[in-house]
Image (cartoon, rainbow, N blue to C red; front, side, top):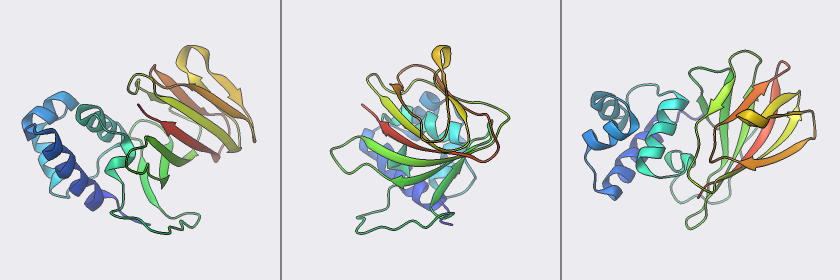
Length: 182
């Protein structure tokens, strides 16, 4: 399995430099310690999904940009492999399957989830949309106030610019997530 920290470190430096903002300012906007961001940019640490999302919001970039391989060609990701990020407060793992190409704002993930702590996501940028197809198990998915129960083969599309939830209702629930970020 690919360890994403070295890719994340290079991406954080690249994206922070692109913004022209200081390390301290990006850390402040993300609500993390400056030393934490410094360590991540140096390729040290094991950031949670929540920390990475907060940095993406602070940098105004889609999440997958932190995990993008440089100049991808043909790519095959075998089952059980790929760049995996694990949530710190939920039984939820996201494996990046396809990062959005330049000029587009779409990412594709395989979600591997377990019942337990719910994965509640903060609103993404205005106009963002998520599409989810449950491929195994059952889950409660969608806007926090209007989530729908989905089973194998069920699909949902919802605005992701409001708080939303993914709650596994069965062990080993899996889903495909397509995020369209504005």
